[in-house]
Image (tube, rainbow, N blue to C red):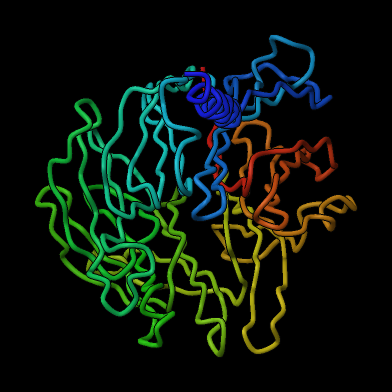
Length: 386
């Protein structure tokens, strides 16, 4: 019996230590920034976490004004949902709020987590393979999906868009689109899907260059619009124009941004483009805030630019977001979001991709305000309103 205890006790101690490691406590960090009371009371930030590390996490910026200063709550999902598996899963790829619910797309974990928007307490999940982004119309969510397994290469199937009932969280329909679809935008009863063909591009078959157009009443693809290789972001402005980014092929086709509008036949068509790399963007009013990160396989270098585009004139009206030295210290910009009321903005720095990143806050005129440590690879954010 005594010998048995010698074997059991170390195992129990190891188990206890493993449980301790699995529980990552929330951190409450005072940023030192001053709160300004408005309709916006907070901001959720989804950290991707390095692929394969199961370290996607959710942070929250308290802008409610309950305190004189802005507080950053790091890693809230585990604390508010202690019964769930550690963290959120593998690679957080998108975050949106629709109605009273918070939607979190967790790419390599093949699921969409759904929580209450006011406190991030989990409601349930939707299982969707290799899911990428989510958008909404009426009572439905539309989720883009690569369908095939991660890096399935030349054997990857066509992508799909899944239609999900936002109340029951049940998949009710789906529609095939191009290879490796990314972001989506809705105008009227049409869903526009940016196809990337990322897996095909990596295997030498060539990237996709099209936007799939889906009739939401029939949930059928009605046409493809040819734009440019390796499409990624697609956003609608207040004039019902679509802004679409192409990442190029990293060799002889560079990253650019395109705009689409309705032609004489009422269908969307490419109107023009700017030779400006755009990795992420946020449209507020007539201003499209962006940063561009252009990687070259030829020179093995990465060039970062920032600026603002006027969506009416389609011109770059500023080649900078800030003159503060802190913006030049950003190692790898990975996300941008602009307060639609006050026009102050936030930039996310992924650093080295495997350790904590940073969130930087700038005032509307570009003055640096504060920065704070985030989870690994901060990339996606959404404001919470009253």
